[in-house]
Length: 455
Image (cartoon, rainbow, N blue to C red; front, side, top):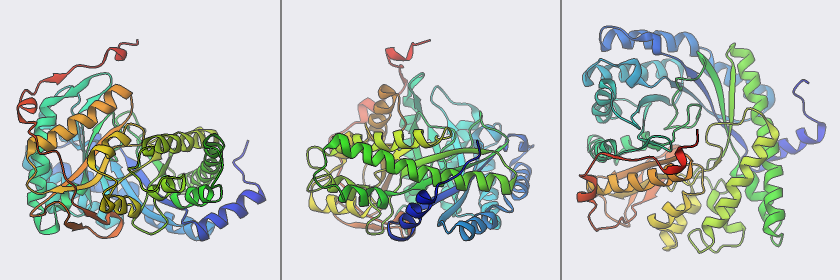
């Protein structure tokens, strides 16, 4: 059956676009670069650059044309490539940095704002390429503008690589120091995962998984303003009925995303991958997941009941997406980044929300502790402890969790960190001052949970 829309659906979507900030947050082209390996970083980088230019040369133009044709705002056009630690296995850290700079140049030349895939998958151990890439992350993120890095250090099947947890505390500290003149901005382009997915279109954690096709088009759609509007229209509706209303709204949002994805796929000659139906907020007023939770009846996010409200929201969004398309994937749910959500910032300022409550809420949201500024003098061991806790939530609950922390150089609790654009601004949040060092220094591996033995 051809993909089609009714007249009522079209009119309702037009209303969402014009009054409720509905948009396509990103069209992300995934590109396999595993065939670009060469004798050194320069030659590998040149091949990577050429392949990205060849595949993505029309990506931005096609996105702009679809936006004009359908009147649907498409905010970002992005690229995700195969994990560079695999492509560059055998290169030195300096060679990895060189490849990263070619990625940045390619992204600039084709006109995308971010390119993801400076990635290592180390959930069970390290290859030589993994170690080189981890060592290269601080310099790469300091010397490029568009490159995003990610590391997957745990899965439900493999457990948690605590050697990697230890290392990433130091990598995050080094990245913050190397970009100290920009408030540690490099750390905003670095995500630490447990159970990372291979088709995530959202930055900074996107990479083109090794199980993916040669190239794909993945769509990230975001509609916090639309969901907020329908919740506000039903102030006394029971939570069960409200969940159904949210589900039906997510269904409509997903249909628009699939339309754009299939059209982009056709025009670019690249297979359509997935629609990621995530409520991804921005600093703009009204484009906030926190405001949705407040509209459900909580005075501020962080009040008792916030985790339950977020769980309901996340589940309803996933169900609506799954009803609308057989191609829903990525992360799909609700994001709770502090710097990118004006309502989250307000809750932190009011004292309603702290890092411990955020951690609890990550057990039911799409990802995890996202875009959180912490004091610049936070130790590497404490950062590693936060990563370990978040990875444990993902491992035990069979879900993706992530950490994107910014230890802002020279900043203390209560001060502000400015990033600008979609990254917004964030208040520096307190962390637990008691030491995690002896625990983190044990290293090794936390074994997979018993329910991983389900074959």
